[in-house]
Length: 142
Ligand SMILES: [Cu+2]
Image (spheres, rainbow, N blue to C red):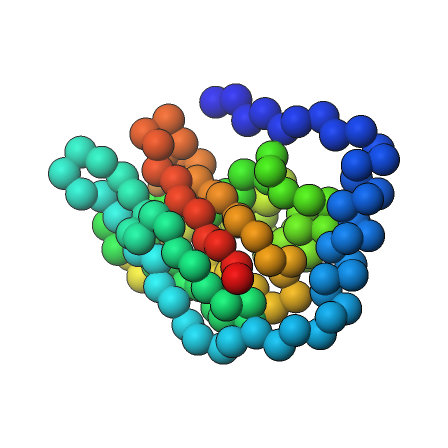
């Protein structure tokens, strides 16, 4: 498995960090709904269902194992700003790799994505055990 991340010039990192910080200090209060994304096996394919979800900042996304375990939620940070990465990193407990949540081995196991304080934008993710099987998805925070 190869996970690539783009090399970003230092100036771009500084610029995106300051832009992200400004958007956070606007103090936009998000929602508080709870959404579920199932991690499942269907036929011969493994998937997040739904694979794409738009939420309001402040909402909680619960990734729940329903079949085909084990799974995990590993974020693809290649398109994320420095602020997105820094904020997201602080929310992943017991990571098994950078930006990758713990391995979920039992049905009903869950990974919680708390979107409070996360910059608006797209948060693509995949499942490490099923990376080569294209088990992936994206949460968009609006
Ligand atoms: Cu999986």
